[in-house]
Image (cartoon, rainbow, N blue to C red; front, side):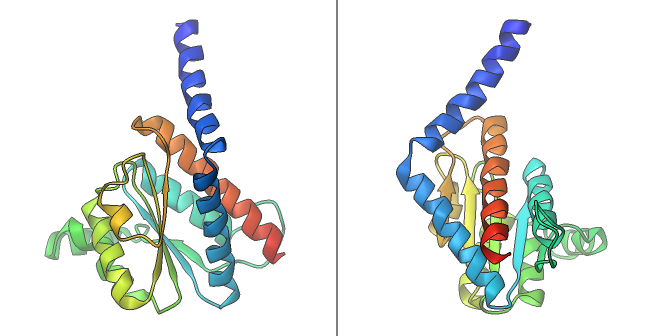
Length: 190
């Protein structure tokens, strides 16, 4: 079992090493930080969405912006779209779970806002639908996916594809990338 533990840790390290050595991917993370900074500086908000573990990551990252990361500072307008369970269950029941994010995006976003979608496969229909609508609403998009990117890569302004097809390793890297974004945005703004 100890060897298995080391194998899992090494697998996680290998994916992160692959990100570190992939300059185009590092450039996309850099571009995402710039978009986040510009969004907040313009008085707009950042919205997050995901499913399952990715929903937890979305909520985590939204809280880092609206709460704090390292610096005691003013709150930044950021929210995860799945946190209102009454809304979530009503729209899922009355329409379909495929529209839970796009319907809320339609109601609360404005041009200049930013939508960050997190999906290991990139094929989460509810996030893809939100990304499609975002284009019509003037909302920019950042997709965090696994290697292939699925359908989300076709609708994102910035596509950050972790070079892996292993869901836990992708999710670990998504939170690393998200923490990088939080730290740099906070340092730039404050």
